[in-house]
Amino acid sequence: MSRQEKKKEKMLESDVHAALTCDDILNEILLRLPEKFVFRLILVSKRWLRVICSSSFRSDYHARCRVNFHLLGFFVCNQLYLCRPKDGRRRPKSEPALQLLTVCEEGDDVCNDLMSSGNCKQLGYFIDSANGLLLCGRHPLTYSVWNPISKVLFQLPQPQRFYKRLCMAFIAEDYFNDILHYKVIRANCECKREVNTVSIETFSSVTGTWKHFTLTCSSNFSLRPWTVATVINGVVYWYATQGKIAIKESLAIYDPRVGNTRIVLLKLPDGKISQDYDEFVLGESSDGLLQYGQSSKSGMEIWVLEKEQDSISSITTSNAQSNRKWNFRYRLSFKSMWKKNPSFCRQTKEAQILSFLPHNSEYVFIRSGQNILLLHIESQLLKVIRYHGPSSLIQWDFSKVVPYFRPSWPRSSLCHEKAATSSWPSSGHETAAPAWPSW
Image 1 (cartoon, rainbow, N blue to C red):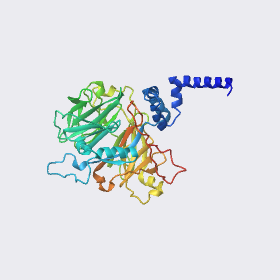
Image 2 (cartoon, rainbow, N blue to C red; image 1 turned 90 degrees about the horizontal axis):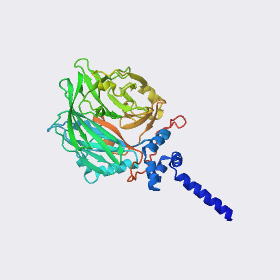
Image 3 (cartoon, rainbow, N blue to C red; image 1 turned 60 degrees about the horizontal axis):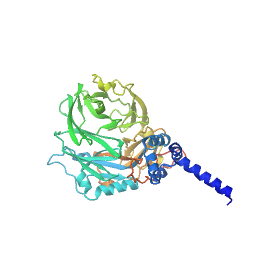
Image 4 (tube, rainbow, N blue to C red; image 1 turned 30 degrees about the vertical axis):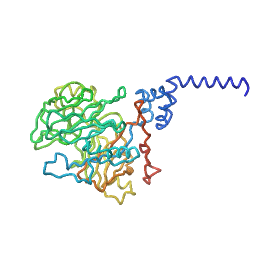
């Protein structure tokens, strides 16, 4: 190699080094790489780790690729054992308290960790998950939070108040300095009478203590016992009812961030083909709005709550009812859905809505018998979710099936997450099938 060629090579190496030491240029390069390769590059240097784990880069990457979660499996919650009297039905030893139907290798790892070292017995029953954390316990006084990534179990102190019937909320905030803050809320449910106040206790991981509040509303209502709230942008949405004869299904909205103790009620929409609904779910749409779905034997309907001009105006005012409106989005006949998916003809024709996907308006999980299916709403095409677990031991008619997602982005120097890989089976409609989520 001539002297001139060596000089050009050194200049090129110098230009490459200068480019890679510029955060803006490095960002543009990393944004064009697949997610699993980006994760591996956190090991290159502390600087690359800092760039990749930064909230700004994570936000830019998600905006471009729309990938921010991984499905690990489905938790099964048998509701027969909730509030069981002393002489009531007991869970058989063959049925685990924490049942996780896994869909990938990472889910298998979480399941193995739950079953090992007595974790399952110590945790109790699954209650909810948020930002990858698991809230478990035994109502009404024993609760714990487990981080499957760090495998750290935190036993919450015993609450100060005894609630015979209650509903819960689990709020996990974003990471700050590699520390994840969370809140657990217990709300008392008065089932025999309607009241305009609700007693709640809130545990904060920052203070490590429970704190009691009394929430007020200018209208009487009752919270639905043994349910878990949906939390969107820090706002808590509980299911509630109003009236004794003409019962109105509503949402009780509570925002713990604004420092007040008010609850605002929002009437749920009335369906046309799902009036006699047997399942109903809440979730967050792709544009960050609350979406509601309900299903009956005939079909399924979905609505989206309109955006509020002032995000906290309805909660801080004295109005009992929120003035926000539901915008109808979608109506699906299960009969029509099965016709568009002839490969599922051997399955039972009964179906019900199961859950929305996080930050997603294109897909929804439904259940048909023991089968969990992913429905692409626009095309009405179905894909089977292949899961591992003792499905024959599950009492499906009495169980709540909840998808478990984990954050897909590394957030700390201790992060050694593996990229999730799951091979989805063919639905028999490759030419017309949508782009199924890759978890």
